[in-house]
Length: 153
Image (cartoon, rainbow, N blue to C red; front, side, top):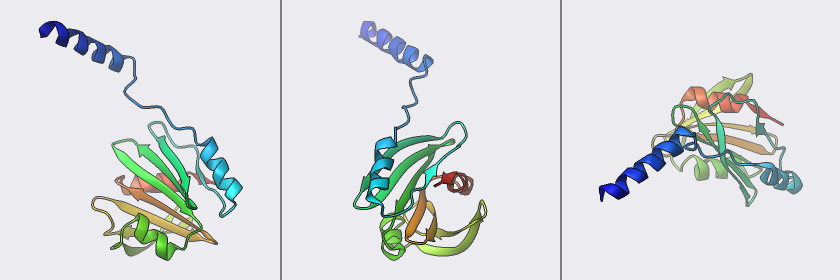
C-alpha cells in the first residue's frame, strides 16, 4: 500500500509546484458575441481587474448574461446583465426575500445594495435604461465595488 501512496503524493506535490492548482480563465468571446447579436441591452464587460481576479464561467441564456468571477480571498461573485425587468430579475437572482438597503455610489455611479437574499451573499444592483446589472455573491463589499467599477461598455 505504501508503494502506491508515495508516488501519488509525489505527483500531487509536483502538480502543485508547477502552479496547476488554479483553473484557467474562461474565454468570454463567444458568449459576449451572442449578447451583442441579440441586441437586447448594452453589454458591460469587466476590464482591468487586478491580479487574482478570474472569469470562471460565462453563459447567455433566455436573455440573461451570467459571468462567474472569482476574486482574491475566496470571493465568489456573479455578474448578471439582462433587459428583463428588475422587479422579476432581482428576486430570481438575489433571492425572493431580498431587501433594498438603499443607494450606494460606486465609481461615481448609483447602485442599490441588497441584503436578506441567499444566505451569506451580498448584492448590488444598477438599472439604467433597459438594462439591469446585478453583482451578487460571497465577496465582501470592496470586491463588489471593484467588480462594479471595472465594468465598461
